[in-house]
Each structure stands twice: as structure tokens, then as C-alpha cells.
Length: 336
Image (cartoon, rainbow, N blue to C red; front, side):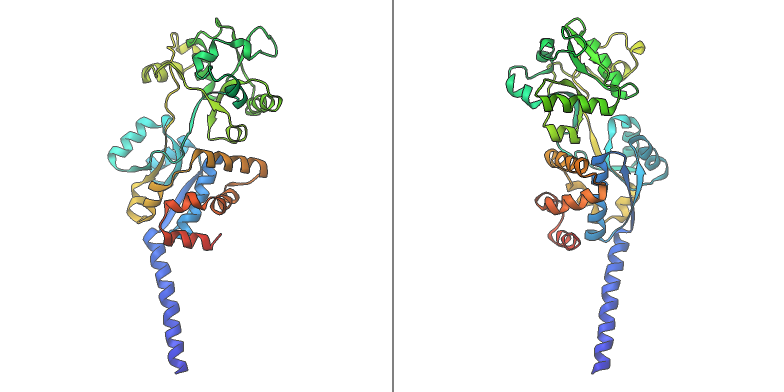
């Protein structure tokens, strides 16, 4: 009898091992791009944990950035997944790859409320509810006195060398902001831009300038992005003028900011091997306020992407359990 039990036990262990192996083989090895900004680091690590613990995938992370990751996926088929690909920078080539079937967008909105634009402090928005668009604020430079010349309004653009520096400079000209009494302030660096925003909020002063979302700064200070009354003036105006150096943009037209689009993009190889893991990516949407809260957590605690991923999974089960089946959710919870 003892021998029989030993045989059955051995068979049971083998069966469990075979089941785990089969599950891993069904998903297989998956490489995920860990992009070099905080929200993408968080997403890549959340994806890794859920794919490994919930779906039995063998996940590796590879360093990435928008253009380099896309080029590698497009030309080499690696990595398998780009969790947060900002597609405006690679739109033409990406659309061609989608048509060929080599790349697939599983999610065209993995974070809500994202975008670039012009922002004010929440205190200003509350005190001036009537000034609720960019154009209305542009009529009141006196509310944002420049420290170096208080007779002019200060608009904070991007540091020199950033792509958004060109955009802001050309929009500054398109809206004739100098004639309206504004100065375009170069903050000098990312720290300078953040510092100007932090200083204004901490002192209860007004601030008007460029920023983007999701970010820890927007999350920490609850910054308010203003809509443009001007409609989007078209890709030709944006791509062939607004986004170029001033000498290449002789006649910029007033326009709203180009729509920021982010997709979760995977390779055709991933689609073939991933099984139900593909459905996870289709459902995986981070609410903007939750993402910003996590970015604040990362900033204040010097947390890396992996630390933040475990914090997110522990703190927001009501969010991520909607992305997966009950069975997968339970497997992930056991590992937290």
C-alpha cells in the first residue's frame, strides 16, 4: 500500500509539473520593453508580474524608448511587447506594419486622461472659472507676472533641446503672444520646469505653461490642462511647421495641440504564442488618476518600476482584477 501511495504521489507531482510546463509553453518566452520613463516602467513591471504569475509566461524585460523600441520591433520582431508606445513619433511606419500584420495594437488607450498641452494651477482655475480656455488666459498676461519684467506675463515653455521647445515656440508665435504681452520663458532644464511649477503651487502663485500627463508633477499638484478654443489646424500645419525649427515654420497657424495617442503594441509572434494573455492587454487600462498617484508614490519613495508594480497590485485590486479572469487574479494575489 505504501509503495502504491508513493507511486501515486510521484505521478501527482509529475502531473503538476507537466501542467505548469504546458501552461508556460502555451505562453512561452515573452520580452517586454521597459521604457525609460516612470509610467512605462510601472506598466512593464505590472505586465511582467501578471503574465508570469497569472498566465505562466517566461518574461524578460529589455530597456527601451519610443523610437528605438519601435525600430527593433519593426525590423527584428523584438521585443514582443511595447506597453506604452506614443505613436505620433512613429505613426507612418507603425501603420504600415499593422497593414502587413507584423505588429498589432492590442490597446489604443492603456492610460486615460493622457496628453500634452498648456496647464494652470488648480488654485488659479478655482479663482478664475471664467478663464477656462487657453485663449481666455492669453488675454490676461497681467495675472502671470514675469519675475524679470512684471509688466509682461510669463509662459513656461520647454527647455532647449526638447522637441516640445519647437512646438511651444511656434505656438507662441501663432497666437501672437508677444503682442499680447507675454514672454516665453526657457526653464533651462527639466528640473527648472518642475521647480517653477512647484514654487508657484507652494506659494499660491499663478503659473501657466507646458506640461504633459501622466506625470508625478500633475498628480502631486492636481494641475489643470486648459482646452484650446482653436480647432486642430491639420497635420500639414503641425508636422511641417509647428513641430519644426522656427526658420522652417514661416507662417504657423493657431491650432489646438495634436491629439496624443498611446497604444500597447505587440508582435505577430506574440499573438501566435500568447493565448489568453493577449486578452489581458486588451483589457488593461490604467485610470489616469491612479497612474498619477502611482507616479507620485514612485517619486516620493524613490521606487523603481518593480517596487511600484507590487504597490499598485496590492493597493488597487479593484482596478487590475477587472483586466483578468478570477482564476488569474487569484494566482497573482497569492504572489503578493
